[in-house]
Length: 302
Figure (cartoon, helix red, strand yellow):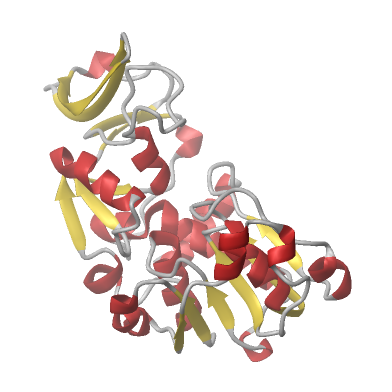
């Protein structure tokens, strides 16, 4: 087989390097029964961290952080591409879209329904947030999108957000303590998709209506939550942890079938996944992503 290209990160004697390399098939990991020719990939927050020397993601070097035109994987990891999805569309959805879909599935399993009231999406211009806005709107929810980017309001409304609000819990972000967020706020939302975490999540939890759920999947706003037990024991709020890595493969396959049908985001290539880059552009795009300068999804063409 001909050589293939991959983005490689390496660190030797304290010197970190990143760049596109030409590799042979024999250099792929030995584990796995399925050899896949990769057409597209997608840039996620953790991928961005893997492209940094101090990202805390890569355990050993050299390492390919998910960007290779050839991959070998275990057979039980493989999800067939639904015929209704083109490869580029699948990566415009990507892990972020899957995470958003899992969040909605988990919240609906816990009783969320459009008739119960508006649903909040934090970090709404990011990958998970953008997909969540579009998916919720397509299912008939009244979506409130939260962002600190005033220039992106039209983008969020194009995805289906009925209202756009600013960043949440600013006082808590400045104070950084549990006392900075009131134990309970006015009940506003029936549920929330939160890929941000941090002090904003404390405000969201305090503002969820009785019996509502918050699906949390990220920590770009920080790993600590300055909250109290009050939302949980006085309003019965559910805090749902969302993990897309270990999600059962049968449920993963079923959700991908739905994302090609009733859960397919509106404006997928026009809005969410409108930006496509080359493999050599990944390092710069990763820095933009980590700096919060990216909206929607970045698709990498291999």
